[in-house]
Image 1 (cartoon, helix red, strand yellow):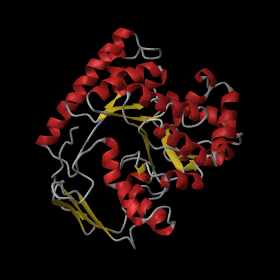
Image 2 (spheres, rainbow, N blue to C red):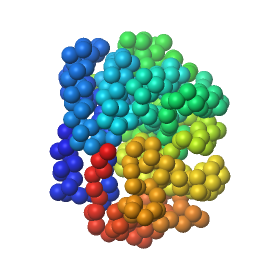
Image 3 (cartoon, helix red, strand yellow):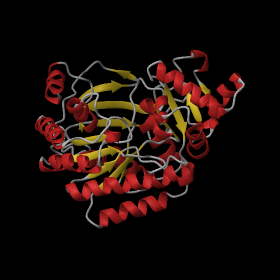
Image 4 (tube, one colour):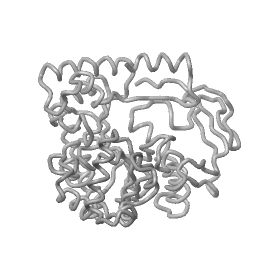
Length: 384
């Protein structure tokens, strides 16, 4: 429960502030257990709503979801709308990894717009992307849909990470196979023809066979003397049997689309990853945005880049009195050099710190100075 987590943070503070949404998948798992591969009953939905109210009263910013993943993938839109209404009644928001980021992307965008309209609350598409080569070049179409929704009264926004590759569990690809049947070759053919080429599937840490770690699917297929489709099916079976813990990177986005969506006035920057992950975004998302996209590519001005990483970010998740240098606001500050700030983490070495960040203050206390942490832990739980 969020109340317990926040209480622990107050007794054992972190160096940074911590805020949280209430996860739809967590609510669904708590109520439905392992029997989640179906729609929720009215009684189960009511139980989820009760749990959500408890989390909102404890300070959750709103409701979050990952509808492309289990257990949320088995939900109906109506389930989400009903819980989003609970969040709205408490002044909360809805943020979502939408139901599809590839084949059914446009339907998923319409779904989150519908949720915002019917539940009457702000909605945010998290780590928005055009992650299917069939959709490359359609960023303007996407922005037009979002602008039309906003003009109709739906407060829809987005966040994005500044990379071509996404990261998830390798076994997520099983959900793309018809009926999740890994003997269906047409599933593998579809993935490698329409979603990702064999050269664009990277396995940074393949647990069933460590010798394959750091290789692409194309390279592994060549080593095995097999075709990429057969190799994909066999590797997915092996990873599933081993527990499904291997990560993968998919180089599925096109740079012009990234830049166009990034420049949309209602898009902010995110990481969508932690420090322990196999994607460089955990160490480099914000410095890559400021160094590569703002300074080097001039996608947006420096002033707009700062707004997208501070005040606009805070506003779009409902955090008050932070994100701006203003009397009465908390002193969460970053001193950086616009001329030198850049990421150094890579797909090969994702855990390399950035450069150009000189000092960081959290709630007025210095936590980072000249490349080193200070040991101060002034972070607080941020409640809605």
